[in-house]
Image (spheres, rainbow, N blue to C red):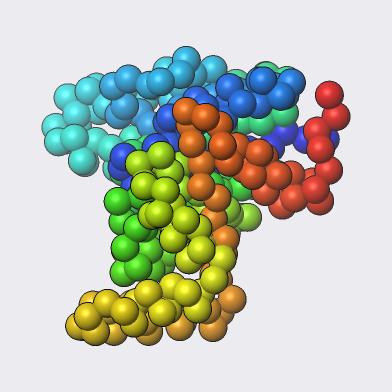
Length: 255
């Protein structure tokens, strides 16, 4: 079976780097090989030791100095430079014999989701065996309006990068037991989410959320999402199963 490329994507603080580290450890515990790939040239520290690190090719501080750019402008240029260097990065990734490549994308979601260079990165590494894991923000999703907003954002990312995608709540530990149960219900029952929205004060925001939810449902884009704990490893098997189902027809990796 070919190597699977799993991109962790989400807003800043959603837990991409932490999940990259934890899922890699879970795979190791299960007897599978993986490599961690850092695609964020602007990160200062990581909770894992990257096997492949874009900072070996691209340095934000050097870009800022050479092109007289601020941090944001340098990050945008760095994203385009990554696409130009993706052949070299891919060669290093391919030098590893691994079941999974876990790709930690930039903290600023827009650098991956809304730059054409991200498509070049995914295609260069190998889109045919690649999948997105979109990470939800627990602070947002425990509110029905926030969950609809998050679903819209995830669908926008999927539209921009059209490879298989799963949705993950990586910091489920931050929710109370009641909040976690409620969010889990909303994740697989659009009617329950609709009812929760109707229980809110029907202001302009809620009315728009209802219309958005209806539109999402109409195109069949409502999807279950997994609640994951990077501390207890709860939900890690769900991530593995989703990837294997999408990319290998549900077959397990041969050990």
